[in-house]
Length: 270
Length: 349
Ligand SMILES: Nc1ncnc2c1ncn2[C@@H]1O[C@H](COP(=O)(O)OP(=O)(O)OP(=O)(O)O)[C@@H](O)[C@H]1O
Ligand SMILES: [Mg+2]
Image (cartoon, rainbow over all chains, first blue to last red; front, top):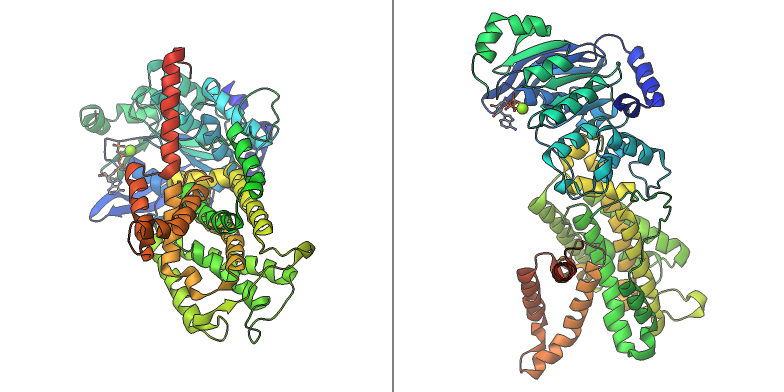
């Protein structure tokens, strides 16, 4: 159900056509480093993710996972290194240009418009990746973009609170809304920053359903502390430690890796 | 607050907003005003309030919708007035070109709009106090430039005898025609700003105000939205500026002197920046105080020159009681009434 709502057929074919034009990797990072003063939040990160691949990024607090996302989406520019999305070098692009090319993200700490309704939040997300961002005509219920926003709201189970102010939503609902914002338009690659953190078991199940229901061509990276969730929604795993890529492999390889077990499962994270 | 999308009521296609009864009453009252108000009140109090309200409204667009406090609005208005004087007719025939109104008025709007957009492009990369500083610096530069430039701006003397064209063979500087002219312009500007607030552009602008980082992460160019807000605001300020120059029949460097530039900020803040009606409330209070406070001061034996003191104290009082101006006071009063009623009706909300 989520699947059909999230990718209307037209969006999917557009994205697939775009995906087939470019060859190679969906996301490719080469030697990406981000310094905050003397602190290297991430250093020399090189990784690549194939189109449609679903990758989990693990790592203890402060390992640099969120910083990696910030560099990829352009929330800030990396100190050095290059970032390619579907073959195109985006390293120095502003964030909005990357988003318009099909990149999406969610924030670890929800970054929503608290003073607006759920409908307006999702509408904004759909508007941001459409033409007509500067339109001076008011939206009407018959507009395609309004219909699309409503589909998304239904897909993340927020239809009941469509006209509610976001600031009065529950925590779990705000996390759902974060996801809806990342699914607007025709996403090709999504970065999920700890979407399951703080959710109830039932809400987690819903999240897993939404993620597994995404159309196959949409790849993503998910940061997730909870191994159970991570291993259910990802086919490959990158372990980060102290701002570096520490291990890469299949979930089984990572789970059974003695070094990983010592470092990650043994202790360190909360 | 933004609430742009139509509510999910099935089949509802109404784009018009519900017009509250208070607005009908106000509308009828304003239309009927010439029947009972004196010429002085129509021209000096209401005409001036509508004009200052429009210029302050342009600041409300930037500050209320966009979160940018600009001090350039009065300068944009004055520039439009100058262009009307320079390209149209004035008492300085050696400079004024005497072009017809259908040419010089649109040109004045466009030139002021381009100027406002340019200032916006310089200002939007700064935040908070720096935006105020950079726009104030440009406003000051414009003031000194016009005062020293005699070739185009006629320096210290400026232009006198700048009057509206005789549309429909009416003298628009007569109190009643001028009242209706300014009322119409103010109403149109007000409606335009209300309208914009619920369009994709306006919603995005409010999104940029609340959370620029998230807006970029949704695909919006924050910079482009902010600059276009300046463009839109400049058009309103330009209309206000032309009316202001017609009202005084003159434009001089002091039209946009530093005190006048600051006054627009005061008007907008006192009225309230959250809704488009706020600047008009502020302008009305300002006009009343400016016109009558010298009489009051004389009556209690002080110099009439001190009216700025009264305005300043009023400003402090309003901002002290209510950081969001008179509108904020009103909203809180309404909210209290609501809660009381809720208590009576058993929590109907
Ligand atoms: N904007 C910033 N300014 C300064 N230091 C920062 C900034 N953002 C992150 N850091 C630092 O960079 C390091 C990596 O932080 P980051 O948020 O990327 O870690 P993380 O892996 O996402 O951790 P968590 O699991 O807690 O979310 C930390 O030491 C953090 O303090
Ligand atoms: Mg993090």
